[in-house]
Length: 314
Image (cartoon, rainbow, N blue to C red; front, side):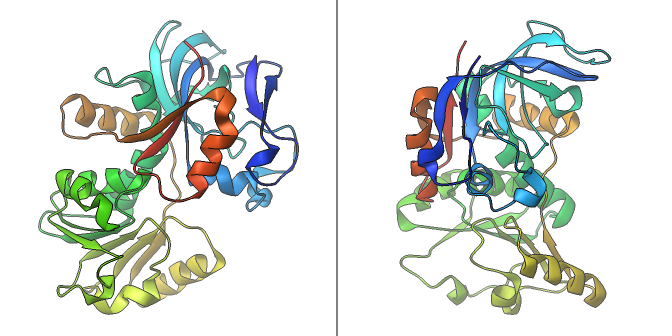
């Protein structure tokens, strides 16, 4: 099968496109013929070797966690889908593997794709939208009337977070660049703080919950602007974030780090919102699989407005 891979950790120039052996579905797995795969900052960090303790050191490695495609075959014990079904989802394993023509995925990590989306749009949803949903609903516990600040509101996770926070009843404040302020307002933010024109710390009102998507506004920096009990979630894993989470539990705060997990019920919830017109996906750019290195380079600029997607096949 055709796939993107790399045989050592490094910058985007370690990526190469070629033929690799196709995966075989194991017990409970679904073999999916991938039509599109989305890229995420996680792909960059894993490729650079930042999480080698979790991801391992076996090569070659195929990047990619998000996918949309068609069920090719079922492994023993797999259920809930059938060959020919169009599905989408996210691979939970640190090994990734979706930037390829075929990927084997546990049946519980995928669901029928939203019917209103193209394959490319559907592939852009899982990791980012699941991260936003699980951070806002499960960790921050957003409730109606909460004032929720989303830092990094115009990125892949941020644009979903703005919308989902509003769907959960929150009043949303988005922090993003001035050029993206209009889009963030359009998607549900009641207020936008353009960080390149105004100091985000100058916001006059306190927030009930703070979602640090971008990773540059940790809890110690914003705790003075949080109502009690302090609720803060970051997407960026670090030793400091882990220590803050442990300390916060002892002090009665809710300072957490979101570790997203793909599961069918949450994917089905996202699809319902999408097909009802309540949740939009924003795709910044689409590249063919052969241009994966260019797509990774663009993702590393951290200037993507929405998601970066690769077309794989049909």
